[in-house]
Image (cartoon, rainbow, N blue to C red):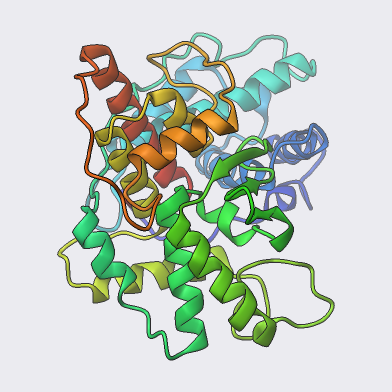
Length: 363
């Protein structure tokens, strides 16, 4: 059943050359409407291939127009996804199956609202249940230190790499957020960093640990001036050629240091994100503060939380994150948060794991 497929075209290329009124033409118009409505580039780019695969599956069965798609056909596609096997013989994860069916359902909902269809064949479609898995790997404080010690500090790029991993560990920011960080987002006096246009195009202000701030200052003052190429757009982390770092390169870079540390675990940028959240939870941090640090809008098991002040968030961060201060005092006694906190903790970790898959990284 599994067969080699060509890489999917870019989202808007779906409608280029497509006959008017065909499903591919509608898909292109749908993706264009997402861009007009302000959806992130990542959202559009991730939905495009999903629609392409569905269109290809339909075309192999002689279906080229959306009007020809019925609920039984969508159910047949759902079964096909369930039995599909990848090159390694493994099935698609339930979350992947859910995403592919859900994105197709959203497309048909748009078609119906735009009056291209009289009824929505996906309206009564039952989506696959998503798994709630915990992260595959989380680092201990000792393992983090082994990874952080791997860069060659005699090499300017080694200083950059150390600063990158210190920031990832200290703040748990997403890969996309780190590559987009600018020098104007850093507030050394308040020990905070403004993350602009995070997931959902939302800004958030979060604290940074003292050690990470020192490494960041060392890189910005000693190394970055040697890398920057005019005109300087202010991006913090630059390649050896003075260009902003590519996300895939960043993942490979961090992964290589994790492997070199020989700790028996694999992972990349999201591994530090998982680790930061877990260590703060184990340190007694309230889930509201973890939520704001990570930039999660809500958790399935909790109500929408009110916005937490940066001062209170900073206090909680310094009290619970091992890297928040250069020398931490002995842990204070902590009361058991109870079963409700354990549920929130599991939700946070499960959401992080799902987020890693969406971002194209493993654990």
